[in-house]
Every structure is written in structure tokens, then in C-alpha cells.
Figure 1 (cartoon, one colour):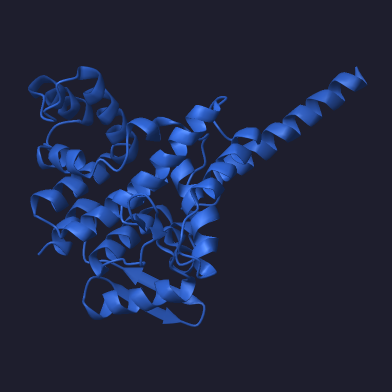
Figure 2 (tube, helix red, strand yellow):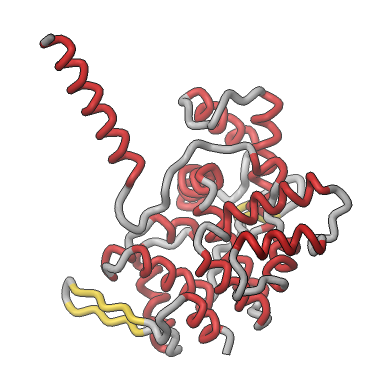
Length: 285
């Protein structure tokens, strides 16, 4: 009987540890097993803009997607290809309806292309733990050392290690690892994180004030603490250290996109809108 109780305690403790690991701090990017979907996806910038330009905010996500399928708004000759794209679109941008409405507003009001791509990248990477970890665990340290050339073999090797560590949703063959590696690098190039065709380099880091402010508003909804928001890993996706985040907050404040005040250990951050969709309208005025 006592042995059974001990086993139950150990099992309960292990489950609690896993739950804590998966939950993370409030506002942080969630973790999930790596997926090989990137092979069929990429950045999909053109398709994403097409979908969002046709998005009807008065309809539910399901009804919007049903209309996209019925009218073949993507213009794909293959139904399976269209479904692959819609699956990625749902994963990246439709987990929160407020995000879909805000992005549709930005597209329809012809937001600057670079700003849009930065925002698409932000949501795409938050929804894909593999993309996120490649940027934060591999590219960021390399960028910090001033090494801009990306070695495909190093990325491939890291992915193999992650597969061995059980971080993937299933076993990956050598062929799959190779395709995922190339898919990740191509996607990050299309999102503007990397540049180059055959030989890729880390592109100069750039985040427009509008994109920064949108991301800050989104993060504020998930992390109300202004001081903690400054330290979220999300900023690392843009190679921004804390002092860089603070500098851009001050610049955005000066341009009237938000209000940012620091007094000692207290950071107050407010926006001229109450919803993400409303703020998208502010950013495109």
C-alpha cells in the first residue's frame, strides 16, 4: 500500500512539473511540439493578404473560412493545397478572433508592407515553436556575436539534436529534417529575418514604430505589467535587448502612438484604443 502511495506521489509531482513547464509565465510564448508543417507552408505573405482582404468581421471564423472555400478566394486549382494554406492560416492568425479582425483592418487600410510583414511574422512565430526556437536559440546568439552568415549544416544539426531530445510531434527521417531545415530558412527569409537565395545571412534588424506598437498592444493584453512586458521573449524575435525595447517605447510615445511613463520601478503603458481592432485603425490613420 505504501509503495502505491509513493508511486502516486511521484506521478503527481511529475505531472505538476510538466504542467508548470508547459504553462510558462503570463504573456510568454507557449511551447508545443515541433511540427513539420513548415514544409507545406512558408511565409505565405501573398495568400495571407488575399485572405485578410476578403475577411468579413461580421462573420465568425468558421463562416469566413467556409466562404473562402466556396468561392475559392485563394484561386488554387488543388483543393488539398488550399486546405494546407487554410490550416496554416488558422494556426497563425485565427486562434484569437480579435487578431483576425485587426489584421484584416491593417490590410484593408493598406498598411505599410514592411509593417504588415513584421506583424505577420510575429504571429506566425508565436504559433510555431520550431520557428521561434530557431530564431531565439540559434540565430539570436549568432547575431549577438556579429556572425551574420547562416550555415545550413548548423541549423540541420540543431534540428537533429532537437528530434533526438523528443521535441518533435513524431519521429523525423533524415529527409524530413532536411526539408524542414530548408523550409524554416526560406520562411524566415520571406519574413525578412534572413536574406539571400542560396547563401543566407541574418538581415539587418528592423521594426517599424507601427509594427512595434501593434505588438506592444497585443502583448499588453496578455501581460498587463508594463515592466514585465519589457522582458518578454517576444522582443528577442526582433533581436531587441531590453534597452532597445525601452528606446522604441519612448519613440512611439513621442509620436503619440502610445503613452509610456517610467517612475522608479513603476512602468505605466497605455494606448489610445481599447481593442486591437480599434488600435489597428489608429495605426493606419
